[in-house]
Image 1 (cartoon, rainbow, N blue to C red):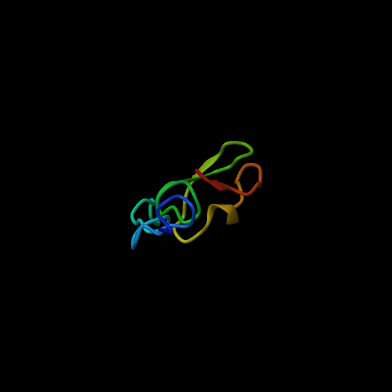
Image 2 (image 1 turned 90 degrees about the vertical axis):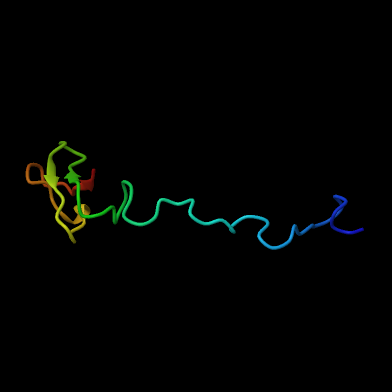
Length: 74
């Protein structure tokens, strides 16, 4: 009998295998990454200066007011 005796591919039916689950991710606007939401701070990786994040403005597009380096999301 092909498929169930370990000699070839076997399909377990609908819903088996990878990629069928949902809800395991964190979703949008969560975590420390681009698009992390409107709240929080921008941090200078060079000198450690923190400034409030401005909604709609990515931190990497802002310069540090002290040293001039690009900011990063905290």
